[in-house]
Image (tube, rainbow, N blue to C red; front, side, top):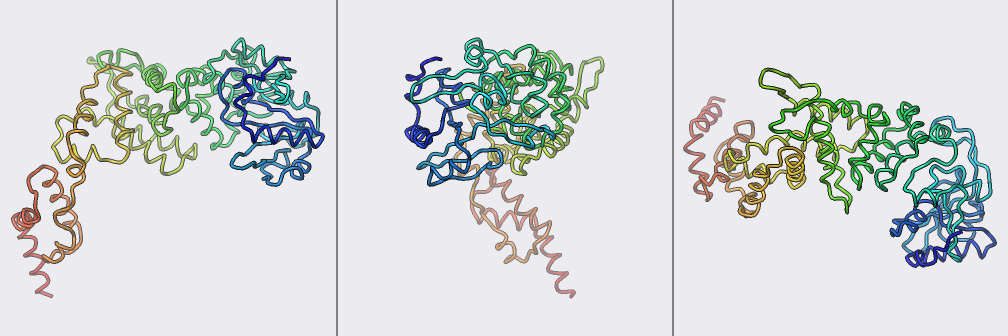
Length: 458
């Protein structure tokens, strides 16, 4: 056993209180899982899980405030002040039939509980009183070696819960660990089973892989194991789709995508919409590539990319809000090529569109992941500084009520006039209400006369 008393200095008082109360009631109680792994690595845990010999019913008697989040699996959420701790009873599991949940739970010892878990690095128990580790599966050695290995037979572990294959990729990428060869081989053999897992759980794991440190390696492991081809074959086929060397010296579409993930900040979690924008922004290229004497072309890849990305995100059950934002990122990512030629009105509308900073960041990554030229990125940044907010979103000089008072009826012409007024205002052609009214009279007096004549004929 190893003394962890120094590392435990970061343990919250409420966690100590929870552990002490379980022990005072005559039960074993330990920290378990990712929090122990992180404490060993010298990384402050994001949360703390507790395992105990107390039954769920006993846990609920010991603590005043509990939430039965998984009573059938022996899990109770204990609430201490503003903190919550997942407290699980030692258990063995049996009868996995759906690749996710066991059909029966059996009370067990601490060692038996550890041996039914997924990976050795998550199978360590820590006694907060003594600072001692209980390692029944060689997890400490694997942490020190930087190896991800299943507890027991990897094929059996992945057959029990297919999502563990994606978790293996996530842990290996984020922790920068090597996957044990037997574990890696088992994922390749069992990869097809991942399709039995719900779309929501797959989406959550994929999002964690591509938004955290090690995203590039995570994608490479997904491709190597065959999981990517099972989950998002539309992305897997980007490997080998060659691009013009002049604009893409980095190589094919897959390498371009990987390089963009390399450029995401390692110290913080990326916006999930940006990360999905990166992985899907060129997804239309595989189906639109043509070759002639001048090289490769991808005519219409943006529109096809939007269509394909919608299918993928619908399949993975994204929220409508996230879906529409990612599709907008794909739809607009090529518009940056023409920002210098845009009329002022179009440029201002471009700069003020929703989530523009996400669009701008995707463009920056797109450039740095290929030709490296940031001229249009810097142009947009300059314009955002130069153009005051009131010029990007000016107050309307005339409204629909003004047009109604002039005799116009709501309809296509009505909307067109208001759009023209805003264009003229953004282009600096008009600046006052009188200017706007004069422009309406000059450009639409004939249409207004037709409206009035039609009214008189009735």
